[in-house]
Length: 442
Ligand code: SAH
Ligand code: SF4
Ligand code: F3S
Image (cartoon, rainbow, N blue to C red; front, side, top):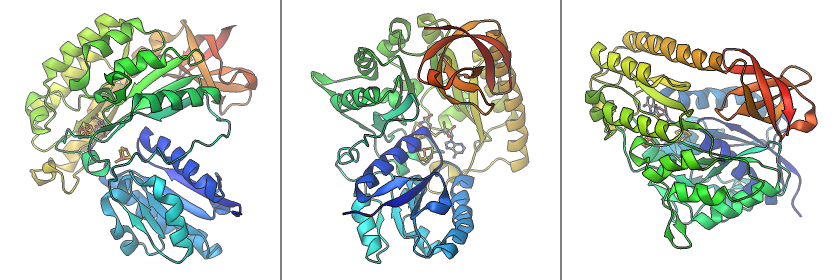
């Protein structure tokens, strides 16, 4: 018999970590762990970490420092570090913070039950290998009913592109696609649990090339197959690389109704000189042509992107090229960052742009991006949109859901409407969300 224990997981970084945290809790469920949202109740605290920018890793050490208080109150409490910082730093984490009992890299979650036994015997296991087996094969999905009607599903992991600034190829390893049937089975299982929207995940999701019944499948083929699941209403995917947008995937945006009109397609910069130095292997013109083709397939599609300002060698003129590109695309939403030096990546060796300059460029870029986002949100006011209601909102009596374009939309609605797609008229726009009124419950 296993004894009842509580697991508290704090998740940092990208959506793949959110998905992995769910699978970590699935992996530990047979060992008697159930998830708590209260760190004071925990018998095991796991930090599922991100290594993408310098501050991300430093946050982990300060969080561990703060959590020492919990250990003082409950000496038998165990601490683990998972995810991309774990993968990158391994044993070093325990050397720097001896309170940590285990370190598990992003590809070794199926080993957690065994590692916990080791911890209970007084060990301090560190697992950061890239095993050849599929980490998800050995983890059974918990049967618990899902709380949210929208779920992530990892279909591809890792990256072989080696952009000069990025740690992902080192923390997630080489690109691997999961077999199509396993994904379809998992999607059906999620739908049986009440999920109506699936967001397919991968660091380069559109490079998907998993084994299907008749050879390798592309992402478009996988999406068309998933669209056949009756009670699955919405399909999304993220994150895509411009060089992997094939014709069929572009066409799918025009002909597959369940595929949502929102595409996250990071370009990083608008200057060809900088794109080359970043090893992105595409030009600004090539990217803009691609956007034209995507918009020709689905005229109302919303584009979203990622930007890095202050990459080594970026001049004011290069930065202007980024602003010009944004002005042309007019993203519905975007993420932008100051370049952060990552030891071990090629760009770390180059001459760096001054911090004040980076901060100034980021401010200018964000002013433009926010303006475009606001214009787009404002254009929604007065329109009736289908909204998938996801959960209670902060205001009592309200639920919050997502438009097809991925806006958060708030409205007065009864709790039993969670999981339903309603028609709602947009009445106002806030900084990062819309307000609406239900006009029809289908
Ligand atoms: N695979 C995705 C994104 C991975 S990381 C892609 O290829 O687009 C998410 C985002 O973090 C990146 O798109 C990039 O904009 C940002 N990022 C990655 N490394 C960074 C660094 N060293 N400094 C600042 N931002 C970085
Ligand atoms: Fe990082 Fe580039 Fe790979 Fe994206 S494509 S994960 S930015 S190396
Ligand atoms: Fe961060 Fe790892 Fe995701 S570095 S962005 S958690 S792949």
